[in-house]
Length: 65
Image 1 (tube, one colour):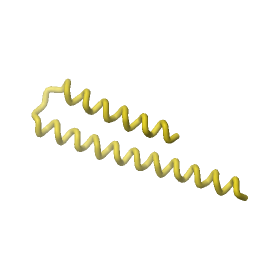
Image 2 (cartoon, helix red, strand yellow):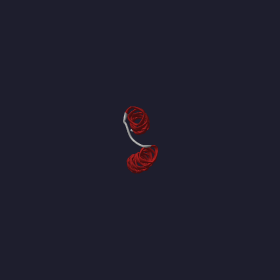
Image 3 (cartoon, one colour):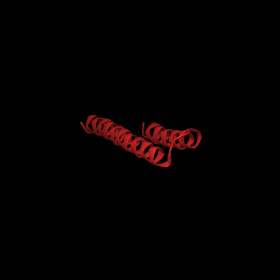
Image 4 (tube, one colour):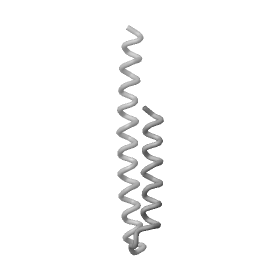
């Protein structure tokens, strides 16, 4: 699950860069778009990490009982 989250965040990052290089927009507009995408990627990565942590804790607790 962690590998998926890392790949997902990396894919989003590459997509933002590629989109920014190919899309016609002003510098300020592009920077704001990149900031929003980075914030969204951070939130999604944090959520994926939390879900993975919860899953691992549940497995640990089940294994120790």
